[in-house]
Image 1: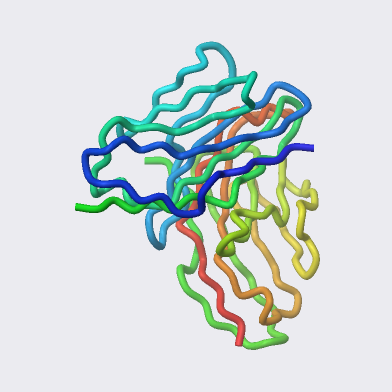
Image 2: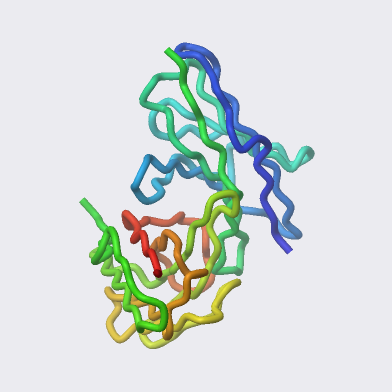
Length: 113
Length: 116
């Protein structure tokens, strides 16, 4: 069975500081991994995804994530936080041969001026 | 710009009412999904459909049904609304025939349903 764990329901950073949102997954087969962002009162928007190939993937708005199979992790980073990054972020996993995507509980990012 | 459109942003319904949530996508996607989102629980899959008239139960189908008569439209039905169905409901779609789930989803803006 697949599962996703996001460490920290709330993360607070100062503007200009590094953003690090943690995600660990479990999957019995090679996973597909995703990060989504949700702004208030909106749906989710795909930030980036890993399917195969290069383990460091770049997404929109300057975010990137690295797939580390040995650590079963897919942490999301951004070198310098901006006020507009304040939102909720969801890590998700699906797998080859399956329709379903499993979402983590979400991490709300606060950015302080 | 490709879109998933949910017919209502906010709905207030009474306990026992039959409620219809509509979702339309203009991307010719084969797969469509209904999730509910609750604080601290993330997104939970209610139902999904991989083709017209095809549907499969997700993780929490009890109290819900779905209809997909046309490729672009996927409706969620609350047969008899209850207060524990107060939630944010999100529709999503993705391309791809078969069981490749690596494309990612396009989400609608959500419907916040309150059952009183």
